[in-house]
Amino acid sequence: MPLGTDTKNYETPNHPYQGERIASEHSLLDRYGLTNKEELWRAQSQLRSYRREARDLLAQPADEETVARRTEEFLGRLARVGYLDEADELGDVLSLEIEDVLERRLQTIVYRNGLANTPQQARQFINHGHVVVGERRHTVPSYVIDVDEEDDVEFDENSPLADELHPERAEEQ
Image (cartoon, rainbow, N blue to C red; front, top):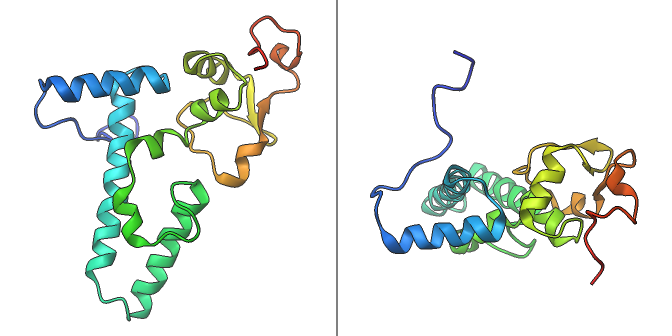
C-alpha cells in the first residue's frame, strides 16, 4: 500500500440522510465545480481544523510568549492564504465559512478571473495543464492560492488557450 493512503483527509457527515445538508452540499458542488462530495468534505475538515486550532489558542493564557508567537504565526498563515485580513483577530477564525475556503482554490480563482466560462471548464483547463501560477504549472484544481500569487494565475504560454482567439476562451464581459 502506498504511503499515506491508509487514512482519509476528511470526515464524513455523522448522519448520511439529512435533506437540508444534502441540498446545501449539492448547491456548493454546482457553484464551485467540485466533482464529488469528498472534495467538499475535505475543505470542511480543513476549516474544522482551523477553528479547532483557534479555540485551542483562545483557551490558553495570552500573556505567554509561546502562545503569542503561535497565534501570530497562525493568523499570518491564514492571512497569507487569504482566509483572513491582516487586521483580523483570532476570534474571526471562528466565523469563517466553507465558502471562504472554497474561494481560495485554484479552480475558483481561474473561473473568477475570467479564464474559463464555468467552474467545470476551469477544472478541465487545470487538469490538462493549461494553467500556470507564476512560472509553475499546476494540475491540481484544489491547490490553494496565496494572495500574492492570485495575479500570477494565467494560461501557459505554450498552451493553445493562450491565443486570444481560441474558441474555448471565455468571452470578455
